[in-house]
Length: 202
Image (cartoon, rainbow, N blue to C red; front, side):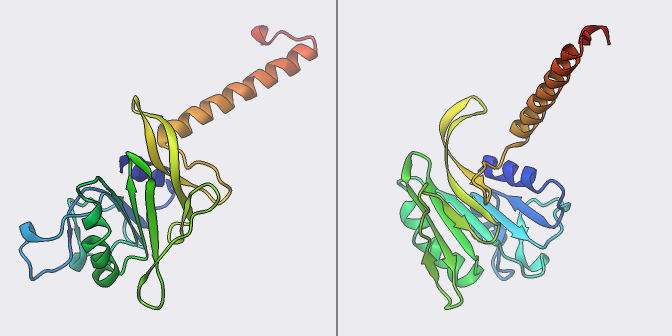
C-alpha cells in the first residue's frame, strides 16, 4: 500500500488537490461511535480536496461528504470473502466509490477490479493483454511488477501511465534523474574530446 501511496504522490508532486492514504479509519456515519466505525481500506485516494491538510483519519462529514474515489484492498485467504463481499457492497452502495480493486500479493492471479457504472452497480473490469486494469478515476493502469523495493523482492501492485511506463517511486525518480545527468555529462565529455579538448582540464 505504501508503494501505491508514494508513487501516486510522486506522479502528482505538483498537485495539491488530492489526498491518498492507507490503513487508516474512514468514519462515514456521525451517528456511530468512532471506535465501532468501519476500518479504512489498505489504499484510497480522494480527488478535488485539500491535499496539504494533515489527517489522522478520513471523516466524511468533515470533508464535505466526500468518500474515496479509488480503493484498493490487499487480500489474504482469510479476508478475500469479506473484501469481495461485505466491503465491496459497502463501497458500491454507501461510499459509491467509482473504482475498486482487490489484490493478493501472494497470488498474482487474484487481481480484480470494478468500475461503478451509471446503472448503479459495479461492473467487472476486463484486463488488457498485460493483465493490467484501467483506473479511470486516476488515469493510470494498475498492474503487477516484479522487483525489489526496500530490500524486499516480491510481486508488487504498481501504477502504469497511458503509454505503459511504470509510475516511479521518489527514489526511483531520483535515480533516473541522476543517471540522465551522468549520461549528459558523458556525452559532453565525448564532444569535447572530439574537438581535441581534455574535459579534465576545463
